[in-house]
Length: 220
Image 1 (cartoon, rainbow, N blue to C red):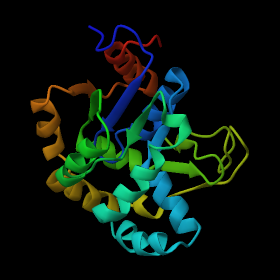
Image 2 (cartoon, one colour; image 1 turned 45 degrees about the vertical axis):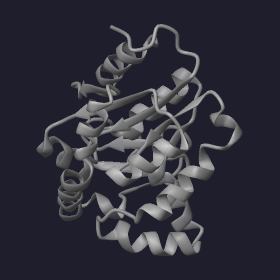
Image 3 (cartoon, rainbow, N blue to C red; image 1 turned 120 degrees about the horizontal axis):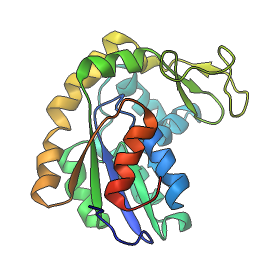
């Protein structure tokens, strides 16, 4: 059964461990629904790239696989959801990650539905250590499941592909431990509010997206 009968205004959160495909699914939903994907990871990486003070502070946490402090993340989100392109809704990818962030978000806006992508840990490790990201357009590839047509080159824009510093196995396992401790409680939090919808990760990206669309009421 669809969570929404008519898709016209929707504020979504996508939950799931690192490597669950949140970013890819959020991008697909952005194209389908016409509302922006808001990725805290992208916002933070831009801050790091621009060498802002926030970016310099965040980089220390990101490189060690730890969560960036709430006050830095919340300020980024607060400003972003006030922008004009969010007037018809948005898709939060990577936020909230802690209960305190979720509680603060309730004070900023009302969320319609929380999608939780479910996937096995070993599959996550395999996915992340094989992941490559375009340095220009942010397109994501996987050397095993979704390789680029030309090695090291983005199919979309021709940009160079790279492996993020936090996509090596040691850091991935640390990130998963951090997720289990600090982020999994959000599942209970949103379930008790009646907002949570579990999405079992499919055999491929399209299968997972089909399951998401079945929940939010959009055609694949």
